[in-house]
Length: 170
Image 1 (cartoon, rainbow, N blue to C red):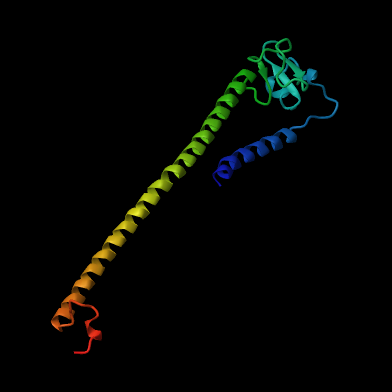
Image 2: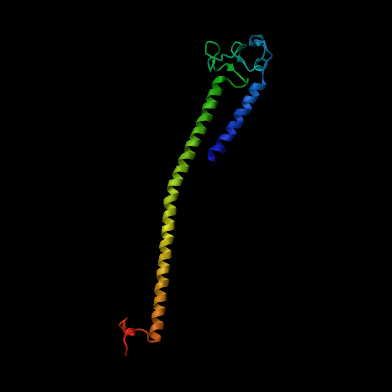
């Protein structure tokens, strides 16, 4: 249940980003090189384009490699999707966010497992203590009832030293 609450916002963000990426399609047959020496915003209207800030070139994103090679454009100058964030900052931000999420998941799992292990003995001890109290009260009530019955027997003279004396004929 807890995992679904954690993962549902992440799934929504991923789906929205995918929808945005697929919605930004370029005209067929238009090369990214035609947007060179223009602006970053013009270049990045096409999702398959990569803007290199150092030489103001718009190039096709190298899809065979995940990150653009340094010979094509340095990571600190490469822009894709957003003009205000370079690949280097994007990688650092995603790494930090992923690390925080993983640490949070491990902490939640550790706390939940530890709390379950700690809570069970405490509850068992509590129930055992309550059971002992109940038994003590029951024993007290039994002793009080026995005392009352003994007093009634003494009052009416029903106490005899020999328990089998009522069977004797006197």
